[in-house]
Length: 241
Image (tube, rainbow, N blue to C red; front, side, top):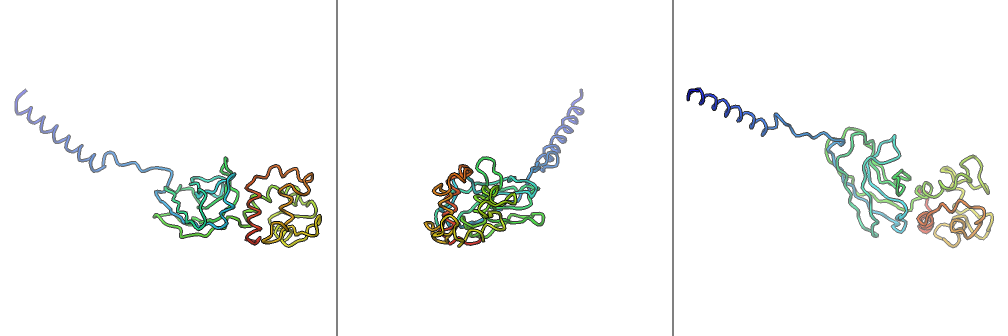
């Protein structure tokens, strides 16, 4: 092979390699793959909890992304027990594309199935940039949580099937008015729930197994958290919140 021909071949080879290298550097040949199940959008939220005595041990509090059609979070971060007056900052990265809302939720310890929402942020349009949720004040002993966590275990006998033992309905629409400042049939010296007064609240005698024990075999399903929550709700005024 002649020298000129060899030089020509070398020149073509060098030129071809330089084109390939430049293409790789610019990303034209192998562009970066950013495909994932998220939107590349991050969110940061701040929470300040009151009634921290009611923070659960047998359940979990999580901040997560959710879809309306599922009882479970799509992605989530667990909240650890805060101190009184401690502001909690939590972040979620890559919000999933199928998320329809973000929420601070009480969930079952092992299955993560939803029980009660402390706070909800609806996703009403396509998220285009990272954002922050401003400080939210969260009452850990809200009546709504007592209803979903505790009374939901009682409605089989107290109104869930249309029948209410002792005429006490513990369904969502009737439990508050049927309990708070209502005289206990079995102990007229007490109210079923006396705001700010545990000792005068007959409901606590029942939940702790100190009254009507043989009529409430289902109380065995209650956790310590359930009793602590109900106590804290009563101590803090038994508000309808």
